[in-house]
Image (cartoon, rainbow, N blue to C red):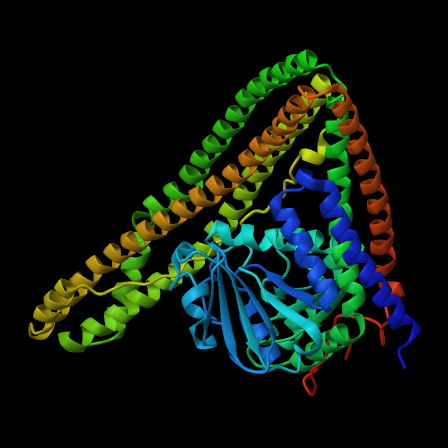
Length: 605
């Protein structure tokens, strides 16, 4: 027999879906097509009891490997190559299939073995195929009952669009699984990600992956550090931590068990809470936009046009401020590249030449009186290892320094853009006597926070031919010639890899900051265009009969009032159904702990 709780849940589900229908109808042009799509998708999830558990994390944290471990089979492509901007949704199906949805609305069915062709940068660079999302259907106990795992591109990968897409999926998160790693615990960007997600969802699971990279004592220290930092975060979400290794399977059963309980006992309430939160904020913005339009329509036509010209003049002044912000950002990029990338890498080989040459000579001496044909490949192998070791030490220092300065440049630029958006708001208020905040876009600090670099080299046929000729020289002469050639190759390889690293980092820093600059600058244009479109709509209305104008004003105010009532109702739903203390649960979150040697343990173990 259905419980009272299940009846209540069904009732609130139905009301939430109806409220979204009312919201879209009342708001009209006040909601952007993207927001309407998110609301419609949210209503469908509420009605069908489909629950999004979104897997988030920085690039190279093992998200895809973890999802495969949770499913018990290799479904997602893994490795060092990042995903494209495509979201991958995994849901239960009676048979396996891959559905590829393109940006133009087309859909195609494929075998799931073809997934890598659509979602990796190697096979679909910069998403040249125009993939919007991919859906994998597979029989899985974990995915039964409506749970959908969503794999997002890594925050902070080498491709700025991946970071943006991951952040753009935020409105569709019902609960989140954030992936950290024990060997690189809690970067500044990961703290920001955790806070951003925690503000949106009541349930946040945190997987501390790669514990197999550390010894027992190191695990305890890393876990304690993560626990202490998490305790300092002021969030409304309930955080639950799981120490595990996606590679070895350690700790995976406990996370699987928790996700199953989440889907079975909390999915309905969490979907309601997250969708109601999105709908409530959308209703608030739409109501403000309608109030602005209702106020503007009270003005005589000539006065409205005069004020529109005042607003445009003020916008032109703000255009100068935006150009200055762009110039300051570009100046910062040039300084960053000169100081942190160009200078240290252009002098890398010369700065280390004596040290590398001496080490090579020592290695040649240690190899004794090997014939030239054996000495040459032995020194080649040493050169490869030595160069990789040096760059292995250099790259993390460079990346840490660059990432820190990239964040500071972005924060500074974002602060300027947000100030300009506030001035656009003030200009609208001064010109039209009403706030236009409902027409302003959100601005997020969706920054790339980390870089990666993969050393690789391709032997040239000429090098091989020359090396072969000298390997055939007899005795000490051959050994001396091989050692001398090895010294030349060593310096050449150092210069070559430094140049390749410099080129890669320069390109990525510029791409990341260009994308960020364009995203935030477009938000200013979007705000201005929305306000002017409203003014134009009002101007057209004012040329109509006065009675029609009065009716339009009354209609706008009526709709705004209804939207405000909807917002209040949706806020109540969010508060009640998103409060972790009111959710039906079996047991508490427990504490984060390191797995003991004899068993796999997590916070709920």
